[in-house]
Image (cartoon, rainbow over all chains, first blue to last red; front, side, top):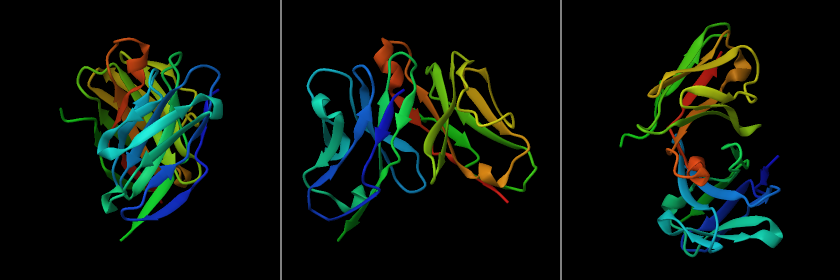
Length: 113
Length: 118
């Protein structure tokens, strides 16, 4: 069964600083990996996805993520954080065999002015 | 496109009452998913449908929970009787039509229904 670990429950950064959110997954085959963002009171919005090919994927809002098979990781990055990026971020792993997504517990991002 | 539409956005009810949550998926999507989000357990998949047929309901917590999809544009999640521990945010998501297996996993979420059972 697939699983996802997001080691950081809460991260605080200053506006303009760089950001990296960690995600580790467990899955027996090549995973399909996703990052979603959830603003307060809203649903989940897809930031980016990895299916195959280039291990560095670009997403919306200036985010990118890098798939590292050797480390079973799919960390999310942004070079300069904006106050509007404050939200909760979820990493998820999917499988072609059952179409389910398994989510991590999320990382809450606070952005200080 | 209007996106996935869920109603109501908020529901407050008393223990023992029946609760029905509604979802309209994105037109043309053939997979529909129901999730529950709590602080303790995070996002859990409850059940998902393909072409209106339930495929996997292994995440449904107990018999008090039931879900239906009478047609391609409507699904319900019912809790009867409701209990305080059912308080959570319930999300519905839908995914793209068949273009290869990979496309099935791009799930689009509704805004959720926040349920409070007193």
